[in-house]
Image (cartoon, rainbow, N blue to C red):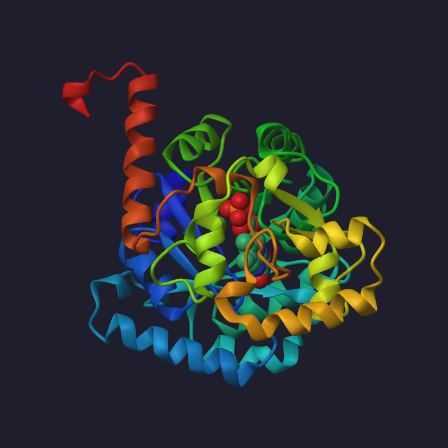
Length: 354
Ligand SMILES: Cc1cc2nc3c(=O)[nH]c(=O)nc-3n(C[C@H](O)[C@H](O)[C@H](O)COP(=O)(O)O)c2cc1C
């Protein structure tokens, strides 16, 4: 299945590393660096077409008109764009799909799964079939339903360890991925490439995901600590500081309530580094008071991050393995090359042949 990806995206190196669409955090520089290093970088589409237009214009400029990364007969912009479908208007976004033909559009978190059908149809029609449709799911049943409704070109299977938003209830990819792959085969979809997301931050995780049957991996949290990430330095410092992600992060809806984000479908929440805000919530502080304190805290800049703070610090359980900030290209190359080496050793290929 990885070979199929290489046909669709000729610039990629295997094992494939994808940087997740993360609103504001996934900058044009981040997406372009990831793709130029042999991965696939994603921007987050947001909800405002004019803002996305601007991001895509900036990203296009980073590649240059004659870039080798624009190779292939379909001449797409070699990055992807991700949408959180519940808050997004397809009719408003569609002209952008026509204007900037990207390699992939990633769909996630619709109000109902059937919404994916019209999105997939419109993306394919607007791009003349050049833009591939990726869909992120979090359960075996979702994967099967999504295949039936929208026939995505790529499925991203997100486990519960993932940073940011995901299903309130799902499994880690260690069991979710192989069970999903088996179910897809049994249902007559043996050829869809399945990517693993959630808790993967370095080469060993990438190699493990491939052993479980993944055709590539998606990393979000690892790229929050990339030089090009568009997040506050305080947030980035937290990603590097905290360890033991199973205890230092938590799934909750607190972050949405603090930011007063309304509309997430009920079965989603988000994983973030725990701080004073979570402790206060556990002791019964009201939402109104939490929001007031959060808004106060926003005035404190980078000082507001950390155990004592209340800032929204999304991160996955892999956070404890991230020790340094690096350029995105280095993250892609180290994780991909490192995984290849592990997989070759596991297959008994001698070091001299690596
Ligand atoms: C800060 C942050 C923002 C995210 N935003 C989005 C998003 O807008 N759309 C989406 O489909 N996934 C989003 N995700 C989830 C990622 O797609 C991916 O599943 C996740 O990052 C993988 O887990 P990891 O963080 O452990 O690598 C986000 C993740 C993070 C950490």
